[in-house]
Amino acid sequence: MTQQTSSPTPTPEAPAVPIKVLLADDQALLRSAFRVLVDSEPDMEVVGEAADGARAVELARATGPDVVLMDIRMPGTDGLAATRMISADPELSAVRVVMLTTFEVDEYVVQSLRAGASGFLGKGAEPDELLNAIRIAAAGEALLSPTATKGLIATFLAQGGSAGEGPDNAEYAERLAALTGREREVLVQVAGGHSNDRIAERLAVSPLTVKTHVNRAMAKLGARDRAQLVVVAYESGLVRPRAD
Image (cartoon, rainbow, N blue to C red; front, side, top):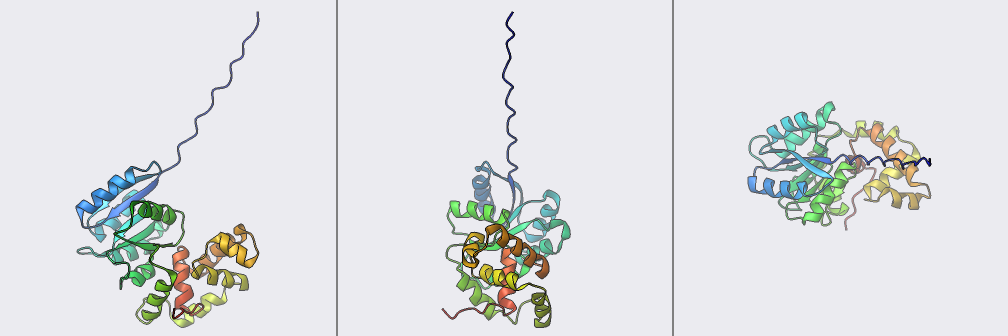
């Protein structure tokens, strides 16, 4: 009798873990719109909603989101204060905050970056821009919306240099002294808004090598992500904002 052999049953691939998103905005209608948009994506899910900054921090600790969409202006504890609290909490070190602004040119933009935000986006952004922003932030990249160019960021940093809460010049000098020559080169390129691939082309190294230098620079400078590297590069004077 001929023995029949059956093909092994293919093991189904485990679904990718969705990006967990926390919404923080005092406008319920806007939060509802964001929830519908985010939950419509197979790689994302909304894990909570907050109407003020204090509740956003509570939910961040309770749900462990990957990304928080944080409105800057909220009653009580505002988005800036909430972002500082999230950034200062070691248990939330993996949480990335994207600040939502009514106007792209906003006096709070530089403050949000200093507070620990990974970037900012205008509330008038297109749906695809918002979804892309979440994915970029979740990947640990610096987020600048299309109209918020690196020149604008540089201008804000230059204008608000004396009003920040960051390290003084002596501490910056000490931190920068810990960088190797190549790490300083990479930091300058990051501050210029270039991707790892572009930096690799400019410095004639591999993208993996660039990533290694970026990670080491973040560790030495105490930066949470690439956005914080940009802040350090400008506020330390390593990179000077151009007048244009």
